[in-house]
Image (cartoon, rainbow, N blue to C red; front, side, top):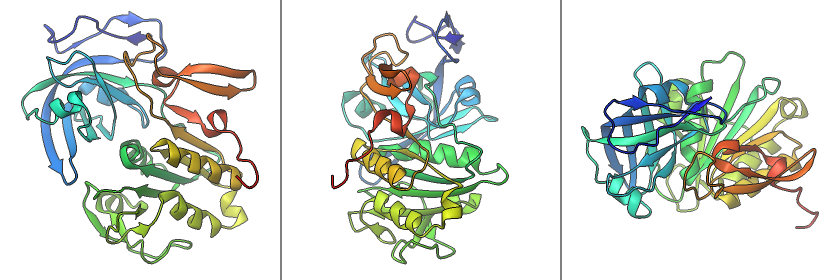
Length: 313
């Protein structure tokens, strides 16, 4: 069963739920803002207390947030971190539009309505323990969540590559070792990933220091090209980012014959599958069907949404 509260904001109690006949579990919580920080290029990271959502969130799932009591339409934000023990959720966003601009003004101690977790997240194939995770722009948060979720799983090898045209809103440190197929110019890594023992490299077309100069998918291609056949047989790709980046990731998956899951973005109204405003054509064994990104996704097998590129295209 899935749970949803339709009463609105605020609530007599902190968490309420009403059963709906949809897959999974969603919680509606009056979440306290614990921390709200601004970063260069109008980027914000907000941390809220939402214990039920934090306990049930999975990498790739998202929250539908009421940014301000005076703005009824919610905004979908990918979950960047979910601390199950402390009950915290963390989001990275840019204030594009009135809703997120209003969210940027909210301060610690205030409460916001959080409907989460929503959607089907990443499900890496355990038979392919070498994972290439590619994130770009607003697609970075789910990759951070996935990396944290996988970091303590035995036998996995995780390589994270992220692209951005603005400064990364994270502490960066020099990478500790050279990686085959990765140019020396890609010399920076996320400090958090270094602490977790996860390899990461960065790309940008904006001339950011320590980043590969170009698309993150080109950086990923170099790493894949340097891999042996035996290594590729153990490799899979997961990705989240803008649509052109996902198409380029699909081309890599086809070129190297690798399984690949991508988290897609779409405009959403209700966020729980009721309005069908975020439908996407998905191809499967029984042909094409329209799927809702919010609840049937946002993660899909790349081959179900992107056709194999034609030779010479």
